[in-house]
Image (cartoon, rainbow, N blue to C red; front, top):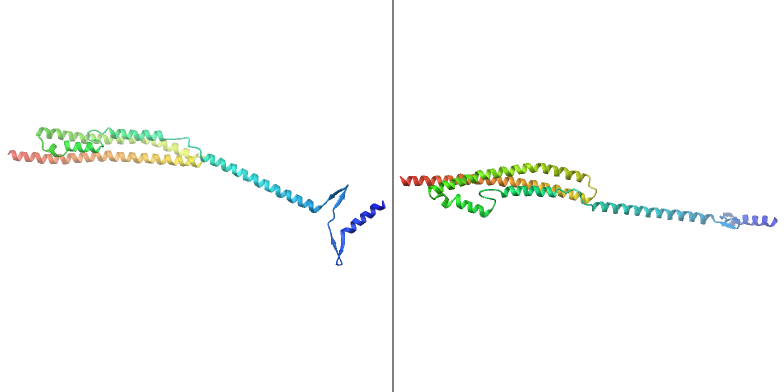
Length: 238
């Protein structure tokens, strides 16, 4: 018992050591049951464990961000489930067919040259009286047919408006629910295609209308030239 007391007093004495007339406090290691507890080492271990946990949390967040990024990239690669290409192609084909049905002088350079040579100038205006009558009737048929063709094209384009409206509604709805950049871009491309189809329809109407007006103007000019020829023959006959 006396030995244990002496040891305790000696341990307490080691805690306070004289340094230059002052007392310096030194942390003592607690010993219980043969196990030594160092407070400084324990605190360091706690700090190290906290830092390690923080690093693990940061790594988990990085992995989560990478997973989110991969999911977004996957969405950006999804194609738009809706397409109006078939409808647009059908509308364009319909307009082209209406233009191709043009009677008399068609939308073709060689046909125009042949038609004008045969009925609107040259020998067509200086032939016999029977030839003049036949050519005048052919020119009248060209003009009437051209206006009929223009009206058919206009009617076809008016019919296309219903399909165009449906296509626009479909694509706008699909673009509003687009889940990625690719779907949004494809929706924009389809809207541009619809706009291009409308511009093509407008060009077709203008072409058909212009053809009708030019043929009618050519008919009037040919009739005037033919009238002068008839008058010349009449005066020569007298």
